[in-house]
Image (tube, rainbow, N blue to C red; front, side, top):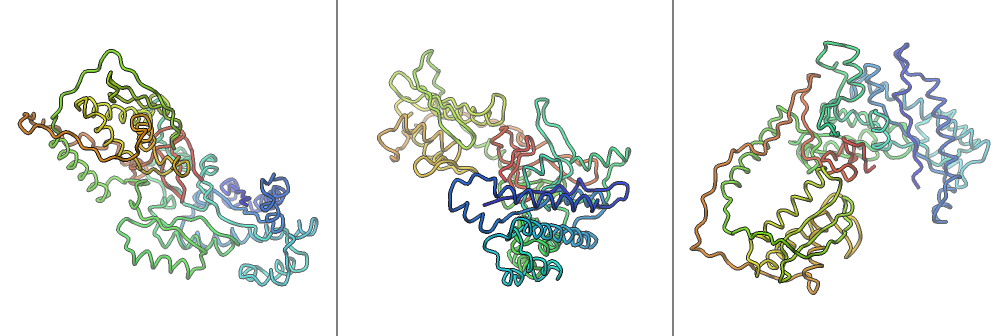
Length: 499
């Protein structure tokens, strides 16, 4: 059973002393420990097995967010030797306070039922704690079998406008879409610094993002925190695209040597959800040039061998509602007077959203393929379209077994198949071959930069940043702003998160 709570470390910065408000932080950590312990007794458990397991161990996971912001406010560069020393001091302070409070609760209410003092203090983690804490635990018991973890806090950290979990900031500048269009925003801590330093165009060197840190810096931070955490840690080690398998192996060995329980390595560009594409990055520019070339070649190969059949004034059809990972889709399928498929309309998401635009374009392309096919061949053309759409996988499939829907195209294929081919799910069909003597129009020259991404900019903070390239579609707001950051997929437009 997950019973997690996070302390926002950035709120404990004492501006007057330029230090941590240690007294208030300790008080908060102790209150949070009691709060999470009380949650165990107040939770309505759906299964008796869960209730018995949780009450026998009383496992909690107190963690934090805002570590990177706190260090920025203190002028400490994330990943530096100074940061490692500060992190060691900070998390030792928190751990000792939290463990001491759990002992106090055990004095009041009793230790967790499975507690065995002799065995408990011999655990590897307990051996790292001071003798006074170990003696208190042995003599008085402890309320919770484990107390600490480090969760991603993707949703809550974003909601609180601070850095998530123990991660560095993802980016200082990003783009948010609203009703007024796409506009640039800065992370609040960066905007605050620029407001306090008018005329400055570059952030100080202690403002660092995930991709500006070396992989070793990521691991050293995780190891420093792991020393004072009795459970697992969520932490992503970002590495460049050119990293080799051997280098990745060496990083995991480095994690093991430093005492990390586990770790995640993300190689830049290894997934479709590319976090950032930086202007001036040779790999990014090469990828853009490849897209330009591919676009030109594809356009030059386009021919129009079919006539487009006009739409009759009256068509009959049905509308099906299908559940998809993006929400309910309404798929309208209209047929001609002979019952052959003629056009398809797809509605999903809000009007004017990117999601609806994609759905509409899918319906238009299906309709165009049908209307450029002879009536007697339209069912065969539709079967080919269904075969291409079926099984297209997305990041968030829903349902199980035969009712599993992998993506919006997969849902559309299922609806088309159910309506037009109820008797069979798979049949080999072929199109009537084109007449080789029929003249084909010459391809038209089209500029090669029709798909060039024109958003790349150099931000005023002196670091190279760009738009979010390769982002997935957000199921909440329908914009292409769903990225993988800090080990979590989240939307930079509406703060939706899958964590």
